Amino acid sequence: MAGRAGEAEVITEFRMFAILDKLKNTATGLDLLPAWFLHLGAPVFCGPLARLFNKSIATSTILKQWKMAAIAPVPKIATSREHADFRPIFVTSVLSRVLKYVVVREFIYPALLEPPAQLSYTDQYASRPTGSTTAAVIAILQSVTELLSCNPYVVVIALDHKSL
Image (cartoon, rainbow, N blue to C red; front, side):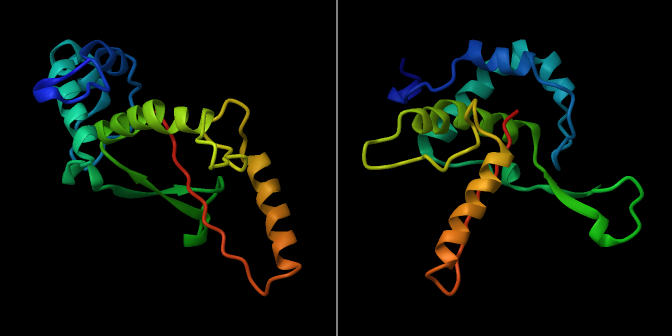
């Protein structure tokens, strides 16, 4: 289907409504727009948001406000006493997380399931039904150990994301 001015429609109004209708109450970002408000207003917001998301995807741009995040400390242990007992989490806006969810589901996940012949995603563990962090850590440890046997150092680049 085509959107306005011949742009591809990645997300329909109905799909946007379904996503907003299933939003769970989560932390708000710096825009202070709560998930419950988007959930309640789904019938009204689904059209404009679908157009906004499609435009964002078509132009490969994201609103500046959606790139900003609040950093909140989360305790790693029950009784936190020092800075090392916390880990930072980045709280982005709910709409930013929804857009990320759409991009992951529509583009990244399908690309991992059917990668081009010249690419191999055998070491991809996220966004796959059979993936796990344990399997990822074991694979990384094995690869690093093998590489260190014949190299003075190893550079590891790992990406992490969470869908809605």
